[in-house]
Structures are given as structure tokens and as C-alpha cells.
Image (cartoon, rainbow, N blue to C red; front, top):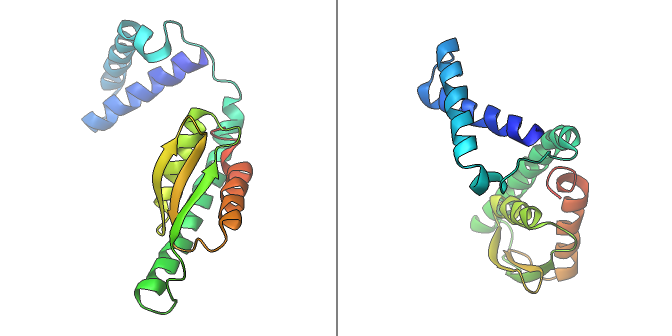
Length: 164
């Protein structure tokens, strides 16, 4: 039930944002159209039967910490890349580091990879689903264990609560 209501609200929000109108009639029409889309495509969208999202409240409460951590990583990455580009810091040893997934869900792996690529200086090269690992190119790959520890700490501290 929670997932159906969340989906209905999200689709209605998209509808009124596209219209750029929050007139009550537009909201009502958006809700009706969204409900129709959810019923018509229920099998495709939610596997036939909407299920609840477990721990939704805790996930939502963790979003601000996750967003602020990603923004902090983006800022730090920007300064590191800027220092290398301006020759204030040498480009020590860029390279690819293999980072294991651990116990992340498929969505958690994608979220981790996306968060990593938002920070300048880190780039997702490949996701090896069978080997349960991610290949990431980093500016400083001298200590791969430190890079793995950094990815693991970010997941445990910020992401796990929101997107496990």
C-alpha cells in the first residue's frame, strides 16, 4: 500500500511540475491519470502487486546525510582535480581499483557507483555483476586498500540506511 501511494504521489508530482501548475483541478486530474497509469502498467511497474517499502521512514531520514556526504565528496574531488590540473599537486599514480560489492543490493551497487562518479577524480569503469565487484578509476591508486576502505566506509556510514 505504501509503495502504491508513494508511486501515485510521485507521478502526480511529475504531472503538476510539467504543467507548472498546482491548481486543484490539475492536481485532481494528475492523480486520476497517475492512478490510471499505475493500474494499466501494474504488472510492469511493480510485478503485478504493489508491496510496501520496508523502513521508508528511516530511509527518508537518511537522505540529507547521504546528499551532504556526496556534496562534500564532490567538493573535495573538485579541489583535488583542480590542484592536479594547475600543477599544484603531481598526478601521482592514477589507476583502476577493484572494489567488491559486499552485501549491497543491485540498486545499492548502482547508487554507490553513481555517487562515486559524481565526485571529480573518480570514474566508474565497469560493474562486474558475476564477480560482485566494481572497477573504479581514481586519481591516486597507490594504496588500493585505502580506496576500498573509503568506499566501504562511505557505504556503511551514509548509503546503507538509504539504499542498502
